[in-house]
Length: 306
Image (cartoon, rainbow, N blue to C red; front, side, top):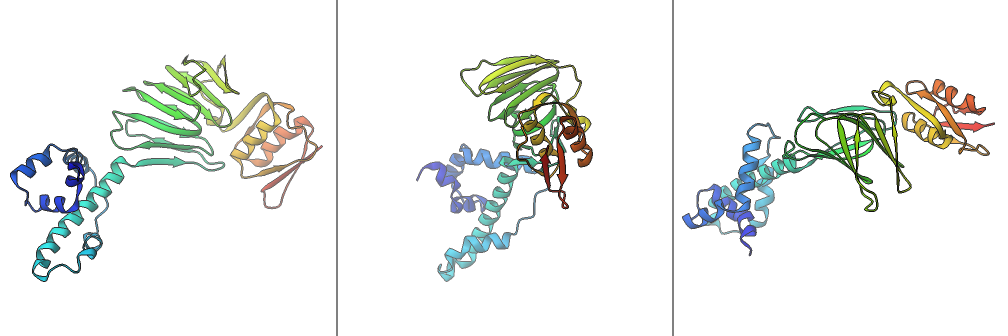
């Protein structure tokens, strides 16, 4: 058995807790990765209150396979495995907490603000997901992201946003990412770097007032004048964009589905709608295009017609 597996073995850990290791075994154990990981978790756990461990339950699981042990060893093994069960249970809870992933998700029409441990703030738009590893956050500030969010990142070590279309890297700045069908990145303060997942595309640096969009494997760049994305002010804006994109955005902000027959959803729309009133949103988007709409009694289905 490899030494790492030996040190992680429950019998060995129980002997360690019982102070029953030889000097040679203890010396070797203290140089192992297993010992270092246990000590790191122990140090970090001292500053937190973790869920109380049900030692008796853990004990029953560990000792169930040993019910046929010799009677004369029963008391000793009971104590040893109780200690091992407690140790293993604590390590499991600590490992899950420190090395686990924290995830935030919003549904249709929902928004949420996330405060990270370093003071960075991420505001999630509707139907978005953000996740990151808790452990060693200050040294490895990286999140996985899908949807749309506004990032206000505190200065410090590098901060990375991973998406399925590429990564955005910063030190401290404010920017918005819309990662849905296509990818749009807008820089509102400082400097950010975008590295595409597509190896055929080159990395780009964005400064304040710049925007890029990745559409059909190509990067389009332009300037923006807003100080914050429209959705942060409670509305969505469009400039010569297909009606299909307007309908998609409406379905992100309101729990509705659209039905249409002969409507041309490729027609271009310029305008906006608010996120707090479905009737007003439909009126400001459909009426300028000469489209009639009917909302079902349960407010779930919107039928379009001309």
